[in-house]
Amino acid sequence: AGPAVMTAADYRTALDTLLLAVCVEFALRVMPFSRLLHRLARGSSGTAHHDTSLAAREYQRLRRFVAVAYEILPFPATCLRQSLVLYGLLERRGVPSRFCVGVAKDGSALAAHAWIDCEGVAHDAAATAFSELRTLAVTPHL
Image 1 (cartoon, rainbow, N blue to C red):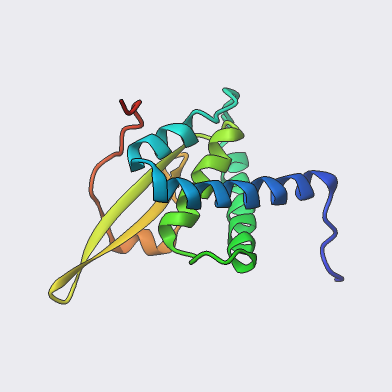
Image 2: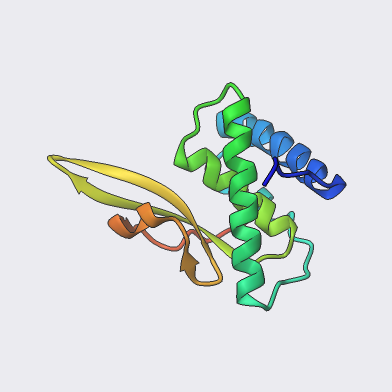
């Protein structure tokens, strides 16, 4: 099979992903983390996907767009940055998701990882090695 052909919707998603990644990078530097999470959650269109398989496919599709964006952009492709962008994209599309952070013992230190839980499933295989700290409530920051 030849190279995949992008549709107009794919180009919009790619642009949306790149712009959101730049915004997340800026926001990480200038605002409290809780406010950033709240703003990403506010992007929800309100139309939730009720079909788990559709939500899982959208998660995987958007995750690929995020990975490509971080190959293009001059920002480190950390799990935190990628998870924040993916969370914002899913929320904008009404796909139920949850931003998660976990820790694991790494020798004498702690390692941390961020991932997205979508429809109750952590699709990120690395997440299984980490204990989630707590559910991060998305509340307005004063």
